[in-house]
Amino acid sequence: MQCPYCVSEIADAALACPHCAHDLYLYKPLLERIGLLEAQLADHPDIAPLTARVVELEAQLQAIPPERQQDARALPGLLLGYWLAPLLLLLGAHVLMTIIYDINTLYLRIASILIPLPFGFHLMRGGAAHFGAWAGAGFALAISAVLAMSGAVSLVDHTPILPANLQELREFLEYAGSIGFAYTTGMLIGEMLFNHKHNTGLAVRIAQAASKGRNSAEKVEALAKKLNDIGGTLTAVGTTALSIYTGLKGVLGN
Image (spheres, one colour):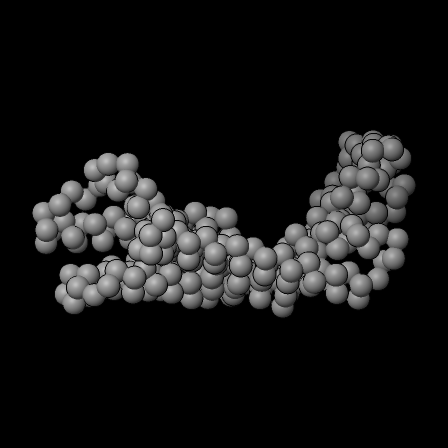
C-alpha cells in the first residue's frame, strides 16, 4: 500500500511508515472500513443498473459533436448575426417597398418570407444553437419586426403603432406568424442537414430502440438517417405552408 503522508510504497502490515516515520494505527482501520463499505456497495443489487446508466450517459455526452457544445461567449455574436441582422433587413425591405417606392404589398410579404429563412438555415446548419430557444427567438424576431414596421409607418402617416381592433390584430399576428414560420422552416432544414451529417437527435434514439436485438451499428445509422430525413422534410414542408398561408392570406384575400 501507499503511505498517506509521503505516498511511499510500504508493506500492508506496517504500523508506521519507514520513510517518513508517521504512525498508521489510525489510518489502517479507516482504510479497512472504507474497503469493506466499497465491497458491500458493489454487491448491492441497485448499483449495477446505476453504473450502466452512468456509462450510457457518459457515452451520449461524448457523442455530442463539439459544435453542439455552444460556448456562452458566442451568444452575442449569434444574436447579432442571426437575430438583429434579419430584423434590420426586414425593416429595410418594408421602408423601401411601402414608404419609399409604394409597391404592391404582395412583394413585401414574399420578401418577409424569403429574408428570415436563410438566417434560420445557417444558424442550425452549424449546430451551434439550441433549437427550442432559437425557435422562440425567431417568433420574437417576427413580432419585433412587425412592430418596427408599424412604427415606421406611424412616423410617416401618424397612425397607431399597435393594432386598434380585432381585424388589425389578426393581420398583425398573421404577418408575424409568416415571418416566424419562415425562420423556423430555415432552422428545420438546417437542423435536418446537421442531423443527417452527424446522425444525432431523436431519430437516433428511435432507431436504437427499433434495432434492439439486432445490435447492428450500420442498421441503426441507416434507420436514424431515414427518420431524420423523413421527419425533417415533413415538418419543414408544414412550416413552409404555414408561413406562405399566413403571409399571403391577407394580401390575396380570405
